[in-house]
Length: 148
Image (tube, rainbow, N blue to C red):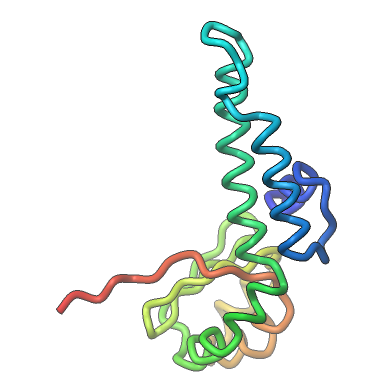
């Protein structure tokens, strides 16, 4: 959640931002902090490079959790969560779930007590369908590439 809040603050947007507004903010910030705007030897060059990386990372992250992105990928997501939970791990309010189809999703804001309940559940997939999937912000983080 800290990461989400930090990026929203950087882009000066709220949680219901649409992709068009987000893109506009991204372009504005990227233009303002582009390293080519500064002369070689200027102490702000390194800061601009770091800021540009942070702006780019933040943009991609916020796009991945945007309601429009989730809506566009809803059908694939529903197929994935129905494939069953293969593995999961929790670290600092982020629950990473790997599904049987090889997809991995991150769920943000999952507290330790909820994670402990998930561990102690006799049916992890059922618990996640009722208590994790509908309640937390998520994004697809990676997919294992299948080899032939």
